[in-house]
Image (cartoon, rainbow, N blue to C red; front, top):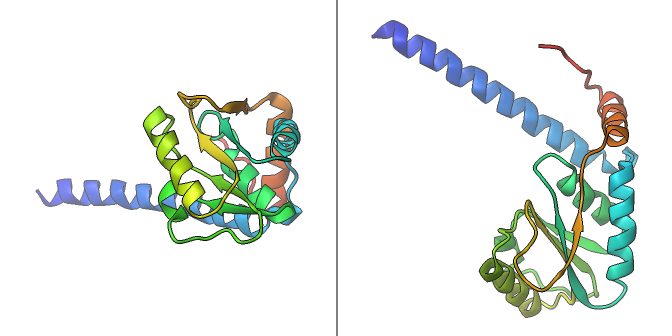
Amino acid sequence: MGNLYSSNKKAADQGFCRVSRYIRLLNSIKSNIGDLEPTPSQVVSINILSERLKYPGTVNLFGLHGVGKTFLGWFLVNVTKADYFSHPSKLRGHPNDMGRIAFVDNVNHTRTDFRQVSINLEEVGYERAIIVTTHPIDGYVYRVEINLSDDDLHVVKKNLSGLGYTQTTT
C-alpha cells in the first residue's frame, strides 16, 4: 500500500510541477506583453476587431484552445482602451466610465450564455465588447475566427525565446 501511495504522490507532484511551470509561463507572458509581438493571425484579428468596434457593438472572437485568444486580450489591453475579464463573472461590479472595450474571455458559446453576458455588459455600461469563445456563438453576432499557422508558430517561438524559454524535445 505504501508503494502505491508513493507512486501516486510522485505522479501528482509531477502534474503539479507541470501546472506550476505553465502558470509561470502565462504570468511571464502577461507581465511582458508590451515586449512581445503578436502573430500574423493575431494582427489580422486586431485589425478586424478594431474596425468593427469603432462603433458600439459586440464581436465574437473564437478559436481552439492555444491559438492566442488570451494573448490577444492582454495585448489589446496594453495598446488600446480595453478591459480584460478572465471570465464573464468578473464583469459584475466593474463599471465602465470611459467608453472602454470589454474583452471577456472564457465565455460559453451557447445563445443563453451570450445573452446573459450581453445583459451583464449593458448593466455595467460597456457598449463595445469582444466575447471570447472556443466555438462560434450560437446567436446573431459578428464573428472573427483565429487560427494558428506555421508563420504564427515562428513568432510564438521567438516570443518564448525572448522570455528565456527554450524548446525541449521529449
